[in-house]
Amino acid sequence: MGKFTKPRVEYVSDQAYIQKIMSVNLRKDLHGDEEICPWCHGTGIVITNNPYGLSGDPDKRAGIFPYKHQSLIFCQHCYNGIIHRCELCGEFMPKGRLKHDCEQQRVLDCKATDEKERKLLESAQEFPPEALNDFVMCYYDGYPYNNGYVNDWDSFFDWWDSDCEGKFKRPEYVWGTDRIEMSIDAYDIVEEATEELYDGAYDSISNSSIEELQVFLDDWCKHCGVGDTFVESHKSKVRIPWELYKQESNSLMSTPNPCTHTPLNRFEVEATGLPYYFRREEVPSGLITKTQAKLIKKPISESTQPAAYFLSRMNKGYIPLYSCPGEKLKDCNDIRWERMCGRSERE
Ligand SMILES: [Zn+2]
Ligand SMILES: [Zn+2]
Image (cartoon, rainbow, N blue to C red; front, top):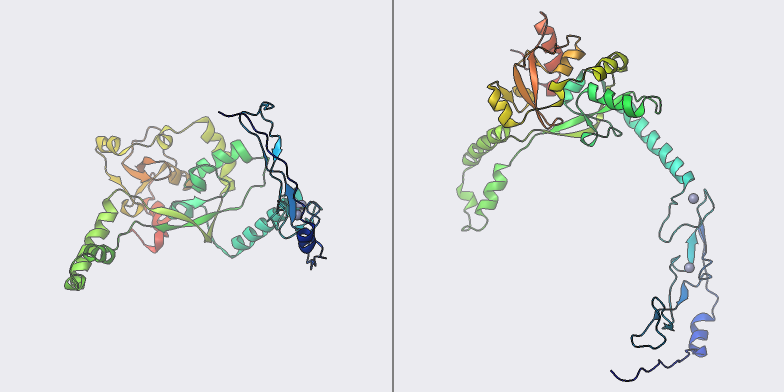
């Protein structure tokens, strides 16, 4: 390596050029919360140092960049020399932001969200607490489990009791949900399958053949093992049964229910030899879960043996179903199945 050569210094000060571009009175038509940027004095440009160091420099010191390639660049604080000042707290806002991230703004945003939610709730159709069974899943924004989807009041109250009671106002409702079933479109499949074939291959297949495939696909979707998907819907709201909260939560927390909290996987369910169901529609009338039994005030005792199992997406496994207790079998069927997707399961 040759002898180290220090950079040569040159100063650029082309007065004529700088005069030409800088010696103007820049006009700023300020609107709303716009102000002249104090960093670049409204010019939109600042001097930057672009510092650098050189290897082999006898004066080299770690972390020190003694040389410069100074130039003019756009101001990092503004666009075009204009900056916005927050009208709430009076501070300048970061470049590109039209809304300040400050306490005052957050309070306003919170109020706006609450108001929006209030209006949505007001216009939603109201359902009683038992409707949770019909919806299968309801939604509550703050519920920290299962992405906010609630499928039994016990778990909801359990969470409320440990995390929220006394700290937050009890909400009146949870949102209902829309149910989406898995589906495969036969026409799409056939179209894709014939895309690379001879011209008119698609047209050689009759509509009735495609319908035949659709019937097969519909049936397959029902039994392939994929459960339904539930999506928060603001069309409906379900009242939270706070009247059950104190009595339910106390007994619930002192006696954890092993059956509800340890769902079985498919192999374990098959090993029981009991029937099992993927969908609520398939569950014969007269079979209910422990939570449903509690809702109709006919609790299942710990010693009762399950009669079947049901795939619960929320519990990520199969939960037990019991024969409806008590004599009024028809009553509990009414509660359970009547509003289910507009379909009645009773004979
Ligand atoms: Zn600026
Ligand atoms: Zn602010």
